[in-house]
Image 1 (tube, rainbow, N blue to C red):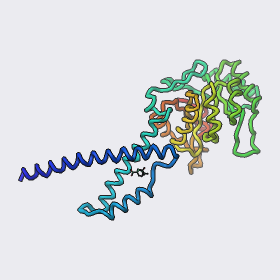
Image 2 (cartoon, rainbow, N blue to C red):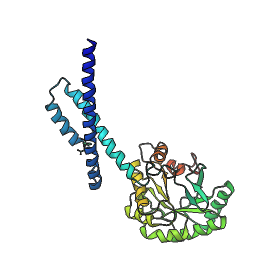
Image 3 (cartoon, rainbow, N blue to C red):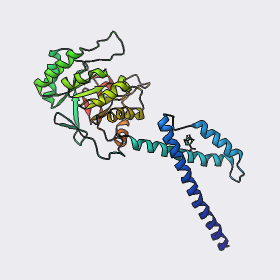
Image 4 (tube, helix red, strand yellow):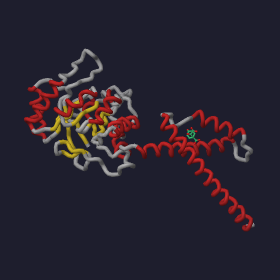
Length: 309
Ligand SMILES: O=C(O)C(=O)C[C@]1(C(=O)O)C=C[C@@H](O)C=C1
């Protein structure tokens, strides 16, 4: 009896090895399909194709496995193939931690971002006047904050809202920051603004609304100063990471990501701060990850400083 059991188990062992070989052969083909899809920009997940294969398999199923069991097994195989296709792809991204295991450190006028020490950035949403800037700069200096952020170009939801002081605002920001020995971050909204940014500010901010402005991202890739890229209001983390990749692949490896809250059904805050994005972005990329706690809540009673990690 036990001899027969051993014999049957031996047969299963041989079948397992054969199936393993076939599964890996299949995986190689799926990987190749993944590369073609990547080049052609076709989504990796194809539920219609999976459905067709499942129909064909259940039609030809001789049993004794029931159709549901066959479907379950093959769905797992499709999922594993899909994971392989996606994993291969993230491996290729320059911003991926798989590509560069160590953290990218960014130097802003001697301040290191992306290492173990937290860095605080704060400042007015819009640059409005010298008086306003000097009041803020003095308070920042007093509080030990070394980086001032202020908006000169303000892409507003409503065309009737204050659109910012533009180039004059950048000049004012630089003048006051120099007076107080602060570094500056400010948003630019057009690819032609790169030279202007290099002249007046230390870090280019790309705002949430422009996260997928690909011409702007490409231009920022040519800039010689670091870029702070904000997550779009409805962007997935994958889209966010790809937007950063645009900048890096065009030549600028000094990119910082900032989680600034996403749009949800919540009404008590302006946006919902997606805090889980922080460890995930740290895990998937080697870029510094910052958190905008003020703009995400939109309430100064909740937080009043922009905290960067
Ligand atoms: O046929 C494809 O398009 C594949 O990418 C291969 C495959 C599979 O493993 O069979 C993998 C993922 C897709 O969701 C569908 C099918």
